[in-house]
Image (cartoon, rainbow, N blue to C red; front, side, top):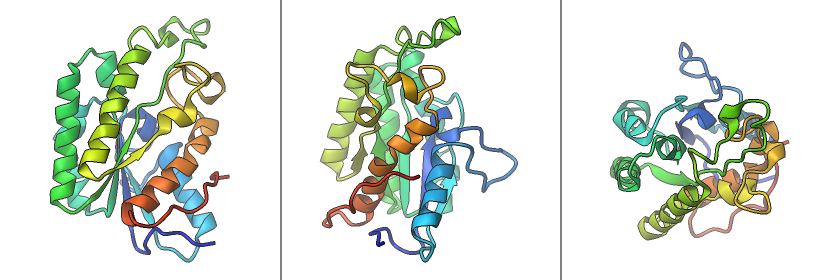
Length: 225
């Protein structure tokens, strides 16, 4: 099995709690229990001959201004070949002006591009209210209106197309039949479970390969496990 991802690459995940996934702050190499850890395990299993490293720098609860404030320290100084930027859902929940979110994300992209780090922009995943009977706080669409998520994703996709970045559409991969996150992919209407992370795996693979080899067609889509 082959991959277009170059040997020796470092892939860095920058984001909020959906990326964080409970990683230890005391261990810089800790990947957490979600997205980043699954990607690393998957690459090791599928491509044992490849020395592709993954670093998780997601921090739970952060908004894009906080992600930007630490971007130099947590991303640029580690010199990755690719950064996956996945944020914005907490900004929407806190009613941050969309223009501010866009400026923050654009600034992160500018920093990455200046330092020759290839950018993957991930779409904000949908939410649902399916679990609100378990906890009223799980009525997610009040703070994160589906229309706001759709609008921000549209902007992210346009930014990626305009700047030559790669757009990883996790939104479509986890969407139910309407504008809601599929109920079986989340424990709380917001965060992904293992099934959710597995479902976005082929989107991740295609995005990473396209980031390093934009003229090459991505490998056939596959699930992590």
